[in-house]
Figure 1 (tube, rainbow, N blue to C red):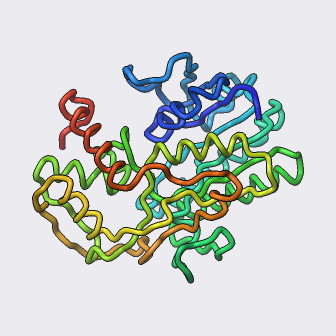
Figure 2: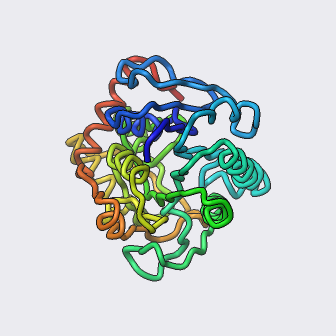
Length: 316
């Protein structure tokens, strides 16, 4: 797949890594987001930025013009907030995306690569690691909206020939993941450990998750853009699980000292374990993670230290 790539939500944490992955692909890249990111010495050159609201057709009309491929990263909610107002979750994610799909097919877009959630669409797993054909029974509105958008992508492919690829990500982490807006456990825990603050744990720390370094995830998006085979849905993770307690142990090993922690009640939206089977991505996308968890952890901490020093992250 050739031509200009539009990255919806490209000014965020994962978008930044995807821009770097696309930088050397030789194709022009355009970003659409609510605001342009602050000037960053590592920001890829020659990227166009369009500011606007994903729910505003006029904003999208200008951004999508001349783009052959769209990477869709936009989500207005997170798993822990989505159940607070499911109607808002539906309207701003599912309805807004269906309207965008109509716009995309009329604008001549050839393919959409969508950031779904391997951490929420499956619900409580019957088997680990979880394959793509596993039943999908999400326990939060976020997982439901991700799954609904996957189904609409399949519908638009059937009705109009709009190609697509879905990447069901586990828990990406890495540089740019901001602890002050709770984008992920890894950055939050690292930041609290760095500042000698107590780390709050929901439950007893036995919940298992699959953590994958963001640069590896970004490479999966680049490969998904280029992929032209029949498979449409891929799990993207490390293929290995870590409990929250094991994550804390890894952080303690990195700092060379214990970290303070407090265990509270568990949450209904947290399944006991989520680890993704990535064999299809290995076989068909020719993708597998290149960075170890510990190397990704070290790089994330280095970025956090620099960001705190430069005042790029707010203190609470």
